[in-house]
Length: 138
Image 1 (tube, rainbow, N blue to C red):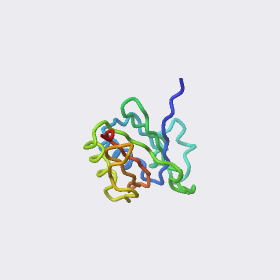
Image 2 (cartoon, one colour):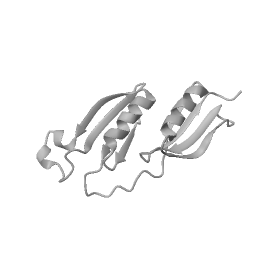
Image 3 (cartoon, helix red, strand yellow):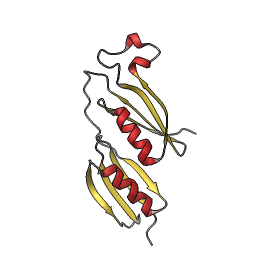
Image 4 (tube, rainbow, N blue to C red):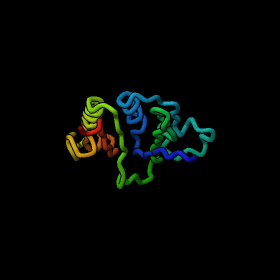
């Protein structure tokens, strides 16, 4: 059976973002490689040596993968999707929501909805859009 995971593209701040997600979400970074560390560093795009070529964070058996776009390539930002996190307890959802929202932009404050005891939407300081929910409504 196939597994569908997420892959994000950053514009030079992938390492910082992935370390933040590791601390905030409680996952584990299994891999983080710069372009200079690749098996073929001579193929590294000019100015990209310190950018992340591939990173993989594992959270409860699922992967969040990411990289930086090579230097000089356009990075249009993240549009047209959201990463969705759901927790059994509303308190944990609120904790993660608040951490992700710090320095970012809340687009829907955390609140009770008909589908979740606590639910909110935001774009974090790295430009990643999130939907965070916790608990089933009574």
